[in-house]
Image (cartoon, rainbow, N blue to C red; front, side, top):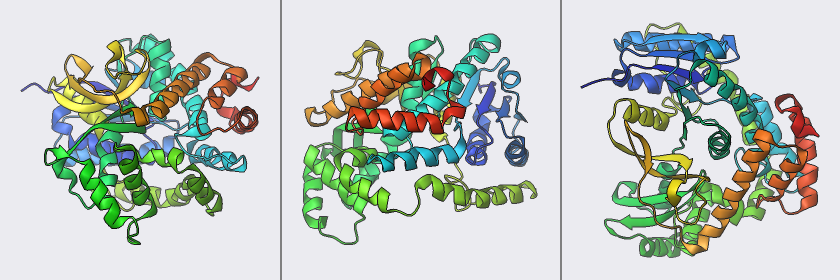
Length: 435
């Protein structure tokens, strides 16, 4: 059995997820024996902790993997085979602005959806412009495995405006069905739910349980549990939405179908999610620093950002591709040949694919149900406009994209939001987006 021996560059490896991601890669280490991993980030202090933990885990597991770190991105990327990208320009302070500012305008503030997601895309793609220039200069054949959010808009920009190969991953199609199934008291292991759409906004077009239609079971569960006080508000919303629309939804559809309720909850909360994470970060890094001092680091899932196994789907895709072992996995890529009916060929969609040494190819897809297709198509059009504005646009292009987002109620709100958020994020945006 051959094993991939590659140079992998992990951009954003000094993040609070970096240690967990390296633990994930090294848990698959035998699939990459003989490889080199370069961890790159702009923060040298964080890099040291992640590199030290990774080196000690590799040594303890007897892996033949060379690990180093650097703040020099172009040097890191030189002769790279694979690029794992997971970074957040502006860190959680920028995300906090994405969540806070829209609330003042009566709009939901969220990491990847609405105006917050739009401005995260602008910041992420601005960095990607530089990454692509570096890759074209020093690693022309490298494949990008992207986890930088919003993954759909990032992939849309890179695939539309460059010749680079980029495959973006998100566990959504794997994990979203569990919300509805558990709310219904059903065993996820007995269900077969196939979802497609755009990232974070997928619906099921196949849904069975023990080989039979899932919907009658959800109907019965909703009647039994709709007044159950032990069922969380979110779980109840998702179960109700699945029963109403006759399709299993992504969790993020709460921001569209329960917009007013969610907006009031966010406006009434004392802190946003990003503010909670900022408060938790010192504890994560204290844990990582402690683990640099032990012989065999063991990450505590309760003290690690996101847990101890991060970005595993990207690692699965990477392993299937470089080791030429066929796998069925969800990937975000252009809808070539109209694989997902109802979406343009050059629009990036999320769908189940076959991954092997030949690359990533969509499995046969069925159209989304009519009841849910329209909103996903609207989000796909927003994604297209957002990518265009991020890569080559100006203020007018940005406002046009924001006005197309279904969370933004009027043109006036789009204009006000754009100008306030662009000013707040001006350090991370190209000058053309500020005028």
